[in-house]
Length: 142
Image (cartoon, rainbow, N blue to C red; front, top):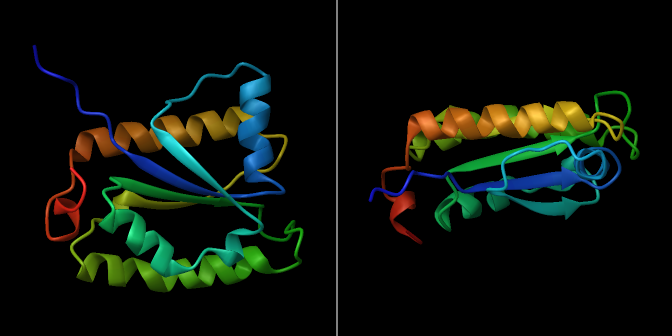
């Protein structure tokens, strides 16, 4: 019997909005795939790009960074820093052999439990179509 491929996703979620949005999805009993592992961070602007690379190195098939909508950051401009930092990270990931579709940045507020569910579901479906990662960084923890 063949086992269906399930991607491993690491999610860095802003404490004030995205984590609360994921919590809203849970308390509202809105379902989403369970193959995401959430790491709660104070702000999306505090996510170091090396953490994303390390996640891929440790075997993640995809990484999701979710934060407050631009202009609504609890720390005023943290999500602007994140947006700029991750725009610069994408070419580096491509250089490392990681498809850009495996990394996603989303803005989800505390009241958007349904949006959170849609984001995780669509990201999981996209990663499932891509299949397991290949390359130097993929060989780590399979």
